[in-house]
Length: 364
Image 1 (spheres, rainbow, N blue to C red):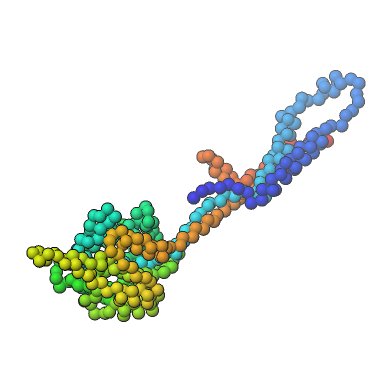
Image 2 (cartoon, helix red, strand yellow):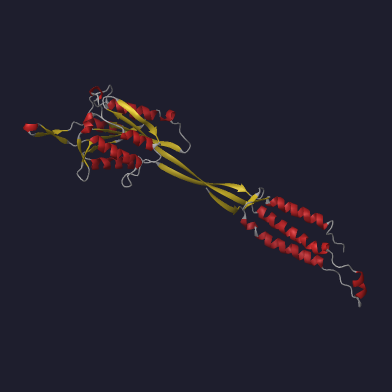
């Protein structure tokens, strides 16, 4: 908050320069005494008292009036203290991250630009972290947005509700692991999408909308490395629900097109990675989103960078001032609290009038 001192009507200040000389001119004119021609002044000096303190103090009268006029002019010019305030309103995006954690995500076949291979889950966790927090390069981060995390294998689970506390979100992301129980494994894409849609649909009840934050759009970023083989609902059914609620789905297939299977003494064989690209493209198109295929860590980072550009928040900054009128309020200068200028002016005029009609009264 920045403090500014200003006047509402500064053009009135020159009035003091005009009025104060008039006061002193009038006082000098009235101070002139009538002269009397007299040849000998010794006798008059003998009976005339020396100028008393009251005579000398009469200069206080125009001084008080000048100060009063000065303060009145300042009060008319309306001195103000302006508190500069900044209100930032964010039209953010509600993003639900729906990540596949099935055991196939342990495949170490997503390499970065240097050729170092990561498991699919490792690569996804690293890039999603940068998508949320920013990497200082391609990804600026989702500051101010609501971001939630749902993971799935044979069953979906929300590990972090939609939140603007991204530090909590990335901690939850770091703890995501593949299933350790065979019965929990699988790829329930449809069920996971419906859970993500439900979390976005209920965001108004979970986190009431604040005056400084409004939801601009709602989106789901689905990432999987396979095809549906578990769950109760089909992905296209979830897409229809998302479309009805105006939720976009960005679908990502994260796996190489082929991977090599070592058969020991029988050599190795290249096998196609079974990603249902047709279904993923269909659910993205149905909701106004887009389908992407990532075959390595670098292309996966590029995909999140593109989605980041498609779904950006809008931040409006409004500057305004709250004015405090100083003519009618005490003014603090240093460590001293001074009375309001208008009150001081009235006291000076009252004092000047009282003295002019009592002790400092002049009799012609």
